Amino acid sequence: MKVQLTAISLTSIFLLLSCADTVTDLGREATARPRIEQLALSNAIDLAFSEVDFAEIIGKKVFIETQALSKLDIEFINAYISGLAIENNAIVVDSIDEADIKIYNIVKTSGTDDIERKIVTDKVRGEYKSVLSFIDKKSMKVIKTYEISGIADEVR
Image (cartoon, rainbow, N blue to C red; front, side):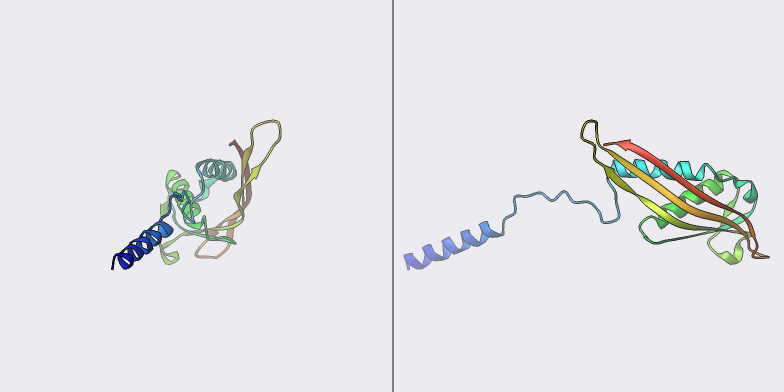
């Protein structure tokens, strides 16, 4: 009886110890980037959109659509363009049927790369490229198209 109790106790302790995990997983969300990558990419996006003249949309209702190879940043990019539209006195609408102008954005590049250097501090490069078009919804004619790009480096 004492042997059985000892065997059960040892088995229980072994199972508890083998299931224990002392490593803390510091993983990140699948959709999030580390802070330095976010900074590099958002600075690149700022630089790219600084080339756009939003005068065409002042006082207009706009619908924003973004297409990209990666779906990772589409929601943020649409929100970013919405912010710029609102700053320029446009009214952002949820339906193309309500819009005067469609802002159509095709993202070619949106991401970051680590640049490792031997002598000086490593850096992260953010890069953004897209084709942004303002389209008159009624006539479906392109009002203006911009090929925009921005590159920004941040020290790691």
